[in-house]
Image (cartoon, rainbow, N blue to C red; front, side):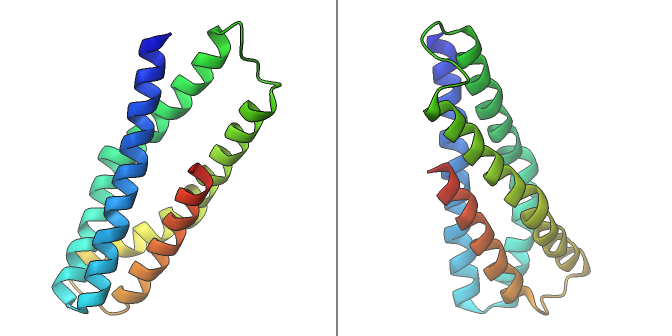
Length: 137
């Protein structure tokens, strides 16, 4: 059981820490107003999302459900478990519906090597991920 808790905490740490780092990088890129910084952020978000943030939230979900399932002390009917699953669902839906669209637009912009509207997309990404972070915290 302790190894599940460790994996759960590591997954959450990577998910929250990675998201926080990307938000800071996005704020910096937007503040600089430099097209190259915006394009680099646009290239970084999908790369990190698929390789770091995505696997981290999967680990958090699987280990969290697994811990409740194997524990005699925890039940899926407990308020804190229901709240955790509900907030996870909110974070997932914001990510799947809103963040994925913004991420795809950033990726298209980066592939075209054109930063037109990039600052607005970065602002939208920061706002969306801010909602995800608020739900998780």
